[in-house]
Image: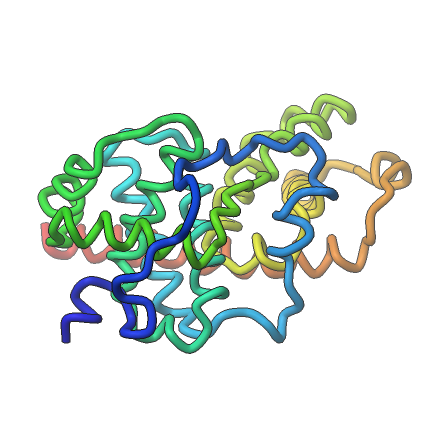
Length: 260
């Protein structure tokens, strides 16, 4: 089916978003609470997109592709958020897309949004030669338009990294920084970016890291203006993802050892 090959459902083929399609910088707004990220792209759990398994698998694949293309972590994180927003905005049409094709398009758009652009032909080459997904240049350019249209060119993405560093510096929990940072990275393999503000995700990551490190953070938590129920639920989801990710890495390592 041509729709599955190009990633474009019949209802959207041939359509182009109007106006200037140049991607604004993803971090271009300083106030999260007034941004499109907050006002439009945080949703209740009941509104989350279907096809979770495809999203999780595509997210892992995008990380591999982004690393092969030597993209910064922020670019990859932005692309993953755009992928999940796209799945949310597409509704039932999401099932008609080729997830990896959309993943490449989101990486292409995110790289421009984060001011680290790479030509489309290079993304096609990396996807085909280094990540095992063969696509053609026209497909990528068409999918870029579909992504921009579905998102109404709302590419503003706030990440938990900055608030995490601010919290660590404020509380002095430097021994937990690396673990908390890894937990934030793992959070992009979940729906957290559609459910909670980046600040809540940062607090949850630091909370989990401190618990695992045996660090007493009660004094710091007492000064926070945040819904602790949200933090605890976010931490639970984060820990589930961390366990699954660790299990998958262990299984892959064991399989590689068996083949050797």
